Image (tube, rainbow, N blue to C red; front, side, top):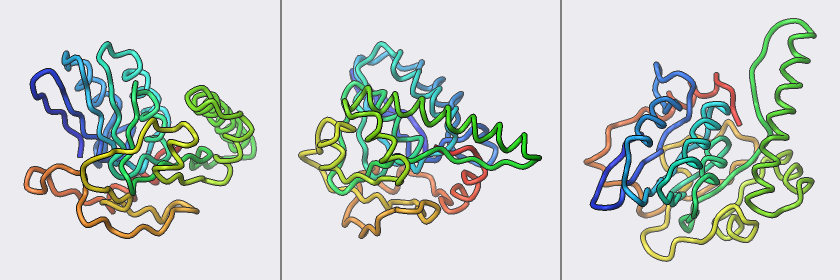
Length: 228
C-alpha cells in the first residue's frame, strides 16, 4: 500500500509495499513515489515504512528525492525497513523506529542469464552497488566501512534498540503500539530473517481504510526484480 495524506501543516506518506521498477504487478515505483512527494508542500512530512525492499535503482531514486525535498522528513519504521527500504529510511532528517520493528542490510541480489562474460559483468555491477551502499550506511551511522561490509555480507537484522545503537535510527518510538516486522510480509526469501511473533496491534492505519493486498503475490513478483 502506498498513499499520501495531508493534515494541517503535516503530510504522511505510507510506504507499505515492495519497491519496483514497473508497477504492472503492484508495488511502488520511483515515478509514482517522487510524483506524490513533489506535490507535497507541507513543512513536515512523516514517511511511514513497512517494506521488505525491492529494486535497488528505484529505491536510490526515491532516496535522492527525499534528500532533496525542502520539507523536514521524519521516517517512522513501523514494521520492517529491509534491503532497499533500509537506505530510503536513511534519507530522512530524523528516523524513529517502533519497538518490535526491524532494520536489515545485506549485499545486493540479482538474477542473470547468459555466458561467462555476461555473468561477470553482473557480478561487477553488484560489487559497485554494494560499495555505494557501504558509503551511504557508513556516512549516516559513523560506523567503519569494514564493519558495514561485514554486516551486509551476513544479512544483518537489527532490532529497534540495535538500530539506534549503531546509528541506523535516531530513536525508538516512545508511544503508540509496538509494531511487528512480520506485518503483511513473507520474509522467507531472506537467509537470516528473525522469527517474529505477531504484535497485538500494528502501527498501520485502521484496517477499514486500507485496500486488501495480496502481499505473497507481490513478494513473488519482487523476487524477479533487482534486490538490495
